[in-house]
Image 1 (tube, helix red, strand yellow):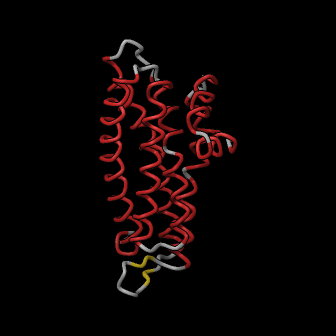
Image 2: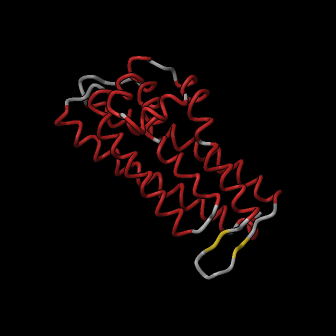
Length: 196
């Protein structure tokens, strides 16, 4: 698992090809990668919001109680896992018109690895300053987009010319899913003490 993370950061093209050759199943990629990586933003958010508190730029920190944060963390974790599966299904749905017709399994595995930079950007939630979290999240999104552009032609066996259009469309759908996830996250973590 860790070797794929380092490979995706240091030499993403060859690493995506290596991952593709492994022909992982969805259960394997979830148990060895997604479940662990998705815990990074969840655990960091839990620690940051209970120990420091959200800072919305007004100089005040809004802390959340441990019980409330635990409830929010569980919901946040499930949302992240569902978002990865949803992106895999979106990639599968969009790839139907191509000759290669990648399997749903390949699409979800691909989505799980492409989300790695987004998972890693969750480390910044240890100090939950809203603008900082958004900035680092944007960097993670850009790198995930880069992995998407690199991986679509090879991982899903789609022609390079069409792969660019496919990647752009997939990235747009991914941004919509991310915006939904971020909105729910802000509602849960930012206003958790009022909701739960």
